Amino acid sequence: MIVTVKDGIPVAKKMTRIVEGARGAYMEFHRDDIIKENLFIPQRQLWRVTPSWITKVYYVWYETKDGAKFYYQQKLVNYADYFIGFYYVDPTLVKEVADEEPAYFMSAAEQASLEAEADYWEEKAVADAR
Image (cartoon, rainbow, N blue to C red; front, side, top):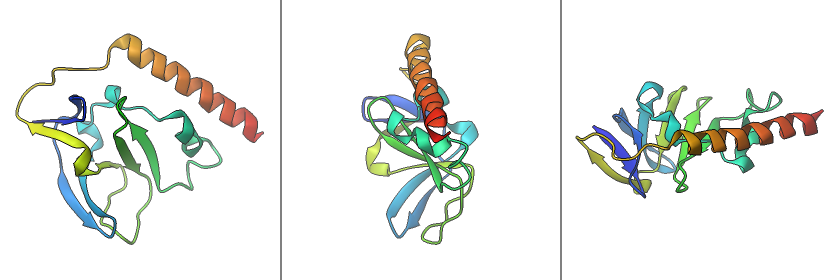
């Protein structure tokens, strides 16, 4: 099984379940089933992984390059049955759940560029916090 979003970007090898909560339905994915090279933490959300915030936030915000938002759950909440250490996405952002291999993976150059940008902003956030 392959789960893709908007532009056909594969994001997971399989889905765990659908979780219904006060904020609607979300698809759940085990961290081992996520295709991590196609997700990144956007610059504006890097504060969530800084030393002063990482233990306080309920989730880490990831996106695909086409903007589909994924949550990596860090803490339990009282409005939904989310599990710590699992990823969640709004099903309306999912294009397809198919029984085929992915047609697209982020290239090594694209991944390196996003990682370099994330490293820069993470270092800047840590420096600014001092």
